[in-house]
Length: 309
Ligand SMILES: NCc1[nH]cc(CCC(=O)O)c1CC(=O)O
Image 1 (cartoon, rainbow, N blue to C red):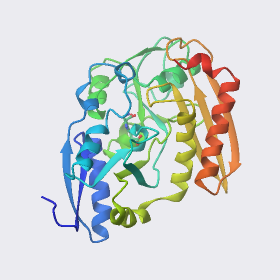
Image 2: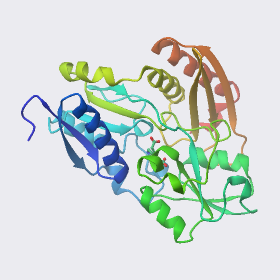
Image 3: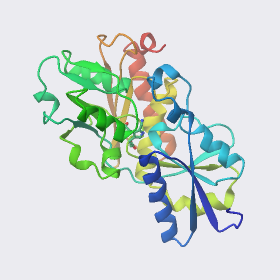
């Protein structure tokens, strides 16, 4: 297929969201005169749709098959939702760029209610993200929260079939798929702190792909890169995977990064949510990671150890 050096083959999952993201990067590369093909693949994470991902365990459920394609030379580039990418990539792989982040917030979607505040006592909310569960419980202890799995279209269908009063999803995914009109309201980044990397796309290549790395480097959006380095450092420091109830979101305020973090207990959702907010001037990746490490430390000082399995 792509034996000639000018063609870049992008390995992608085949969900509508993943394909949109791969097509988006393809279009950006084509604007630079590159020839691009897509290689669609099914990952283990796509196959396990009947169980909550946190119970399946294992990191990188959505990325491993794509990495194998890079390893075997069937593709040169993998496009990921950054929040699905493990904090430390396996030996031989690298994130070469992170694109400018879109809306990082979580969205409230319902056919009857305009916002969380409007939900009646004891309403049923669907989400499978432990991060969302612990923050929803803190905001509205009366709510019943039930698992909701599947790709975005499936989750919306389950809402429309009457299975839930409301569901909570990442705004960015809905916007990418042209489903923004389903969003009734957005949570602020402080009331429902997003997951590390939410709303950003990461480009992964083989670490030895020198020429390709040089070609992709200009696609790196430095403010997003630094913000997400701080967020991902929190998770790395706490030994986290994407399935623990950890939230980390950094936003720029002039030259300073404002980092908000929250950690809930994975089983006892009635236990207090640990929270911290820190800010620091950040000019380098080292400074971004140091800010993330300080936030993790702040959570440890509040007793994070008892929350980490
Ligand atoms: N975990 C699945 C996933 N991975 C990326 C997105 C949305 C897009 C993004 O955050 O970049 C979603 C859906 C969701 O969490 O609702």
